[in-house]
Length: 356
Image 1: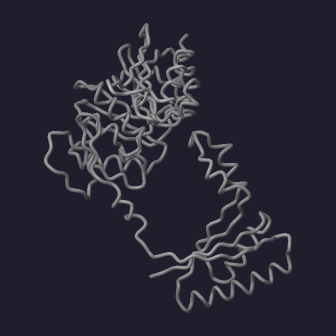
Image 2: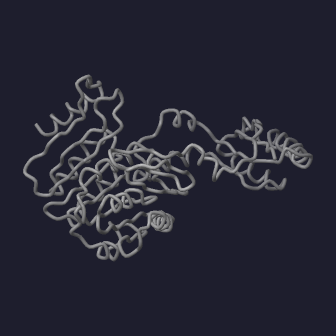
């Protein structure tokens, strides 16, 4: 089936009248774009984002639009005709709602929930891991297989920050560790830790959908709940949850945005012991110094590991934090034929200045 995707551009004052006009014509499922709501989200929800693409900002600038869908059929075009008539009348009565411009696109019906799967293929990560989508078949390999169905949660293994954390887990897990995964999403990091040899893993996320998804992914990999615990909640505000998780973890991993890591910094030492390792990722270089200040203020010593410093565009930054360690160390990927990009040199200079 084909659909008509229709847009009505209006002034902000016209959003509600246009929406009511469409409902009177029997149109439901409206999508409203309001620049003011977008700005409000950016200003009041820093815990959910750390960077906004310039193209998205430009797209949202001055935009007030109502989007709706009609079947490309006789009944759909009949409804569209009624909408045009009503919109023309509204334009005459309320010129302040201008432009009241109606535009249209054709859209093929699609299985939106599942079509993304065709782009998600098995991925070799680091030296040992192979992430395999549940619906894919992988060739025989000596790598550790991690079968995954992320559903609608974050954590497929394809994002650079997730890959960095998986590589760090490869490096630090020797066998028998107790692991805490903060902001677990699909559970990919804590499940990978168990497959790599950790003894027990605990995970949490503020999105309660993640609990079911993480447990399902654990089951796909033969991991039972006797070694894996997942909870929904915020360890900062939920004292009961923090008490349940306890402390003395060998490895804590947090692949989240800078503001959340900064907020967590004061409580992170409660989860660690003197030889623990904290692995953080998802930090833009522009926020690195803020994160470093927060972690060092919490009594953690930091070892910075840039992501693939020898490529023209570094993928990200990992922070290895060790309580009570007297020194920090910078590790960089180097090859004989490699050169440091401008971004890499800027990063190194920032590190030198911070620890001068």
